[in-house]
Amino acid sequence: MPARLRSTPKGRQVDPKAREEVAELLGDAPRRRDLLIEHLHKIQDRFGCLAAPHLVALAAEMNLAMTEVYEVATFYHHFDVVKEGDAAPPAVTVRVCDSIACELAGSHRLLASLPGVLGDDVRVLHAPCIGRCETAPAAVVGQNPVPHATPEKVASLVEANAVAHPEADGSHPHLEIVTPGHIDYAAYRAQGGYELARACHDGGRTREAVISAMQDSGLRGLGGAGFPAGRKWELVAAEPAPRLLAVNIDEGEPGTFKDRYYLERDPHRFLEGSLVAAWAVGITEIYVYLRDEYHGCRAILERETAALQANPPCPVPAIHLRRGAGAYICGEESAMIESIEGKRGEPRMRPPYVAQVGLFNRPTLEHNMETLHWVRDILEKGPDWFAGQGRHGRKGLRSFSVSGRVRKPGVHLAPAGITARELIDEYCGGMLEGHTFYGYLPGGASGGILPAALGDVPLDFDTLNEHGCFIGSAAIVILSDRDRATDAARNVMKFFADESCGQCTPCRVGTVKALKLMEQPRWDQALLEELSQAMMDASICGLGQAAPNPVRSVVKFFPQEIQ
Image (cartoon, rainbow, N blue to C red):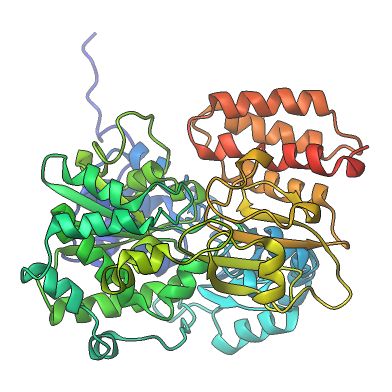
């Protein structure tokens, strides 16, 4: 019997109206594979969700398999994928941060009270750290942050902007993104900005001298790993061209907000550092990866980058601003590179390292934004100036993101090697009234937990290792005698369980199993240690490898809380 011919092609059929809407949204933008996440954002921003017809239309428009589009869209927290037959989410979403600093400030009470206050027209979700720990508890209404959030403040913001009601054309409006004042391009140039970059291109400095100065300064990567910056420049410069620069501003580590602080105030300082690094290493394009929670910073960067390119002080490489979509794992350099390429943010196996085979398989200089922030000062004031800072035998300056039970939380620029006790007393105005220093997280969620008895350990790279902790991005969360280290450890383990990319079993399963064990009144220490060792030995990246640090810290330093 002859085969019957199909009247339609296999697979989902493209809805003509959805195809027309997607094509109009994308306009003249290229349909390249690496722009998939950017295009998903356009649809989400316009329609408030990612409905199945639009995903099918986007796949057709970009000539991609539907599975490629769907697996990327469902990987990231901020994309609302609506299956066929399901209702779209409410027009406005309120996200309440429940990471460690906000939990200390009572975010669980806020999260519980908001649904009754806001009603059914507003969706209320818990959220991982949104990078506003100094104003805990923090929330986000639409795209607008709410510092020191209360039910009244959140409700007032929702009502004032009328975001719960679609426009006449069916689109979902966004709140006005409020950003503080910052040093714009003209003001930065008036203060001598970009003269260093101009001097480099005009022959006033040599590449060898600049890289040598960076090495002599002792500057190490300030995103967490702490690899010497000058050495990284040297290694990437030795790789074959073309080379790329990827600037990591994902900043998802709970307790960390220093990058946002500098971006909101002096964005051109890191941009100039990027230009100098690009010149010294021979880089042709710069990719800036910014976490999606920083909508105000994105508006600043779009405006200031356009001003720089419109009136360049020297040759400026192409600068591409890429938007994250809510995934802590993309703070890991290779996961960030996967995300920039429009893929799921899953870490790569190494070797090869990103310095050799990175973004688009090219040698890539990957830096945290704050590392580049210091380039201008180091080269203008000299490497000895930077290396001459520090306490207790350490070198350099550190931007400490301090939150928790202190009078003055915030970003405090202090000498590397300062102790937690010195930081509290000299920079943070002391502990809150009625609170006694009990313990601290020296490196955010993954850096472990130390007791006040170890509050005199210098805070810097390598100084905390003997205690099973590390400084990472210098996110310091201060605990008081009203807190419990076990509660802090459970909070961060829940964060890791939620944020695991799921690629490797030790992390995907281990974080969930560890959390269940930690929720018991009495911890099974032997089983937790066995599980911790398996995660540390077999996880692909630093998330699974560092997740056991808080557990081990509690067992070692706070045994009275688990017995």
